[in-house]
Image 1 (spheres, rainbow, N blue to C red):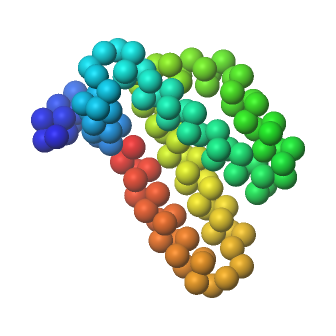
Image 2 (tube, rainbow, N blue to C red; image 1 turned 90 degrees about the vertical axis):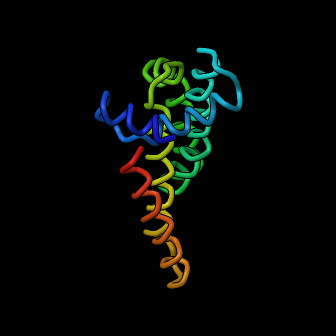
Length: 130
């Protein structure tokens, strides 16, 4: 892990979370290019339920369905979901952040809002290090 952080610091301007998670993924599922691309595919597929929650909270079931369909057939989504880059993880972190933020905005109870705000601030901290 220290070698990954150091190599990332010397060669890339991006924070190291993607490379650390990808390193763990490659240790679990193999060292091939296909295994690395599967990480991006899984991360982008995990965005679909989050997009459903965002769409349903903002505009109802129809909006949720349209958001998921548009994300599924978008050429950019398809292209970057199969790349061995950090875009799919960024989408996942942004969608998670949006779900928690909307929950904080629409939350009715005081305790739930405080608890959700702690989770939201955690996602914000992770998002800064994606």
